[in-house]
Image 1 (tube, rainbow, N blue to C red):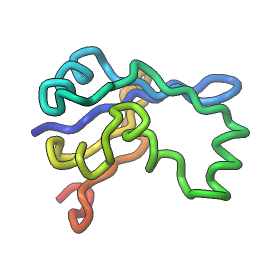
Image 2 (tube, rainbow, N blue to C red):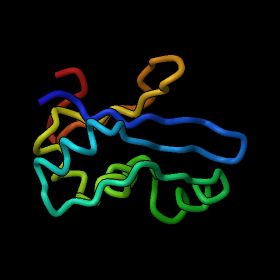
Image 3 (tube, one colour):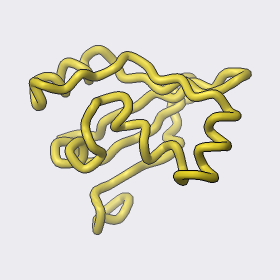
Image 4 (cartoon, rainbow, N blue to C red):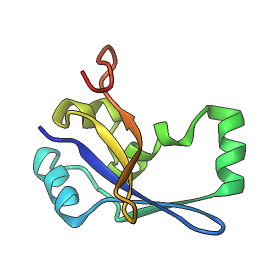
Length: 103
């Protein structure tokens, strides 16, 4: 299956991560008990503190948005792409463990 696209909007005080309505519907189709969120906002100070305690916040955003583990998401999508919707550029990509980016 194609990549799961998570849009990342940068604001003055943080970042908003979001899923398109069609992606949320697709997640509900694959996982009927899933409760995908429209958006997740993370303030920069929280992101900084979180990184010191738990590592990169990007690792946890797919679970926060989909209510599924990152591994469950990657069972049905080839990869997870964090995309700047204004520029259309990929900020970060996650793939299944053992799979190289671009492989």
